[in-house]
Image (cartoon, rainbow, N blue to C red; front, top):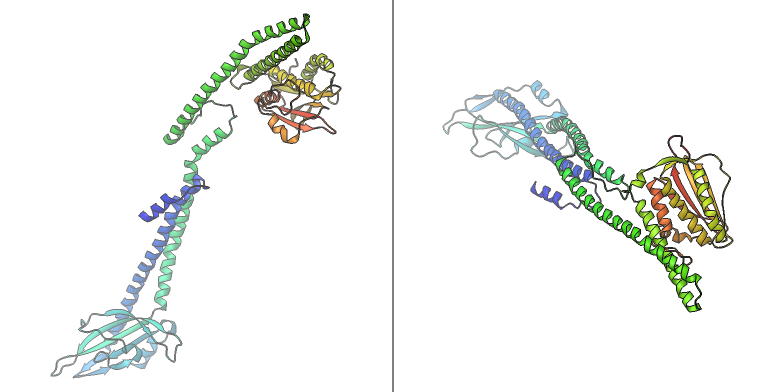
Length: 487
């Protein structure tokens, strides 16, 4: 048993679930015990079968001995032929007998049986039991296993004293083995049913015992990447509660770190907006004043850097507002996405015209598209998409915005006829501070901000190519569950 548990301790759980590992730990010993129980039952059944056969053989041996009557120094054998026929009637359960006196000197019965070696100094009137294997003869082709009862008796009187007589009765072992198998079957059948029921109970108990662990796994898997709220497992076992407390402490530590980082980014962005705005104003005034070409080139580079820095600060503030812990994310209203997008596009038309881009709304869908979202954050997302399209599509390009419903979702599309984004770069384009092109003055936060805001509203963002060239950004949002109040 120690070696068995040593085997369990050495099992490598890699690739096995905890439930399967527990089933192996609990059911494998049951299988071993079932095999051991079967062997023990077989030996016990054989012992009881031998006891029953030995009792019948003893009775037959004594009955045969009573038919031998001593007369002086001789024996009178009163054994009619009918009795012999009864003993030898069943070929499947043959009963052989032999009488020898002195022991080993055949007198009556089966001569093969009398050839067995007699016992030296035997006890008189006490039967002996043993198994013998009779060799083949004319009546059978193979050897035959027999169970023998041997009884030593004293008879007669002579000058040398009483003589010894050996009476043996043997029975075929076939019935004994059949009885053993039947006892074994009758014992193992209910034992097997019991083991099966126990295995089912053990499996159900393991499933019930692991249910809190499954709930913990489901709770963790169902969480959004930025959800750091504590885990709730009040009814879980103590061991799992300890694990949950450790995880909650880790989540709290991570949340404090993330909040501190977000606060720093937000505070720094707020503090930088004013000096950057002042720097831009000063460079614009300096560019309006007369100066030489070299000074103007330097002022233009300073102005461009200030403009990019101000844009970066604005983007960082937008990311801070889109953070899951931000109150703005939770402040949502119902409105018509169709009308909302039309208003935002109208605001961006002057900028598009200045950049030489044809910006407009598609009229393929005129019905209201109700959504529930934070209007300010969604405006930031759409503004980033329009800004990207205008900056990267190039002059004389077309930018079209389309709002419609599809498969029970609201769908917002921004399509341009610019160079687009290569398929292998689309996934990278969604990462922060990653620029897939050297053109423009972007900082690599436009599409990540859109993705962050849309995912906070349980939506998805996808990039597609436009034939013959261009890019289509598709934003999918859940429809509002009730009738919206349009803005």
